[in-house]
Amino acid sequence: MQKVMPDTWFHRLCAGISERLPFGLERLAPPTFIGYLLVSAVCFTADMVILTLLHGTLGLPLPIAVTAGYITAFGLSYLLNRTLNFSSHAAVGPQLAVYVVVVVVNYLVFILGVTSGFTALGIEYQLARVLGGAGEGLYMYAAMRWLVFRGAMIPTGVR
Image (cartoon, rainbow, N blue to C red; front, side):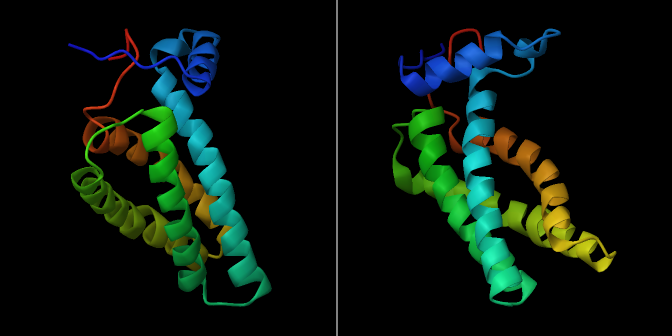
C-alpha cells in the first residue's frame, strides 16, 4: 500500500511540472524525479562553486577541490531530499548509513573516476565534472528512490 505525500509547496511544484511534460514524459518523470532534479541543481551549483573557488582560484589540487565540493553537496542533497522531496520520517541513523554507502560508490565511480578520466584525456576539469554528473544523476536518483528513502511517502500513481 502506497503512502500519500503531504500537500506541500514543493510537492505541488514538482507535480505541476511533471504533469505538464510533453510527449508522455510525465510517466517517466514522476514528481519525485522532478524534485530530485531541482534539489540536484541547487547542490550541483554549490559543488561547482566550491570546486572553482578551491581549484581555479586558490590552486588546490583537483582531487582535494572535487572532494570538498562533493562533501558539501552530498550533505545538502541528503537534507533537502529527505525533507523536501521524499518527506521521510524514518530514523536518520540507518537511512544515513545507506546513503553514505551509496555516496561512496558514486564518489569513486562518477566523481573521481569519470572526472579524473576525462581530465586525463585533456578535457577541462569543469566540463569533465559535468560529464561525470550526468551518470551520477541517474544513479543517485535510483539509489535514493529505491534504497535510501524506500519507505518514504510516494505520490499516488507513482510506481
